[in-house]
Length: 353
Image (cartoon, rainbow, N blue to C red; front, side):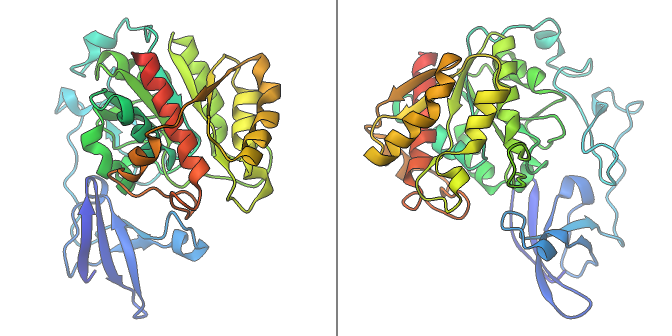
């Protein structure tokens, strides 16, 4: 490697010159591979570059062959080492302390925890919704304690997200669940993560969304956001209040994502067996509003559609501490998308009281 470009919590961005002389950007996670220094040889995975992934966009450092990181403590050496294995059976699988393990300082709070006590939880399809949801929450309740649960449909390391790094001061904590890792707390399941948000972080409300870089095949069921419906079921099973952030767009070039995306319609309409409150901003463009109303009509038998006022949300979105971007489109290019997410945040905050 030739230089460190920049870094944020958990990640270091590098300039690397390949053996053929080509220059690439690379990303290293020091917790997994050690901290790279100028002059180091680095072993890279370049699949994301070869595939032209917009979210990936990096070669990923697999190892520093000449300077390996120290071995982590074994459970026998440290009771706090944990035994929660994530990214299981991959070459870099980390072993982490689960928030509810016996060695965890939070074990007592979670040993018998079984109820969210009405905690409002916003569910969103894409990671890009997170700052907009948070803007909606902060518009009316700037001191609300908000927890973020990173699910494993996109990037597994929480460290990959610069958005999340920029929002740290606005969250009481991040909980990485399932195969995702790198949060302030680790949970093996979404259920355990939700209970940790309530009983460990003492959140007033929570947001559940996958990391950046979701998977989609363009088919009815081949998208990672299908897990949003399962999140609704988990929240309801634990006595929480699911609030659905709808993926609404008038700008997406793909017909399946215009109006209400088929991702939202499938996740909430087919997968979510429990009832959620689905939020629609009350000042959409008239043509878009009609399209949304028609699309949501079949879901009204199970879910409650809530139309939420948007006064003040534009200013809140424009004051976001991190850039707003979804599929390469900013706030003004896909305004309805971000407004819908902010409205869901506002509604959840009002439920939290």
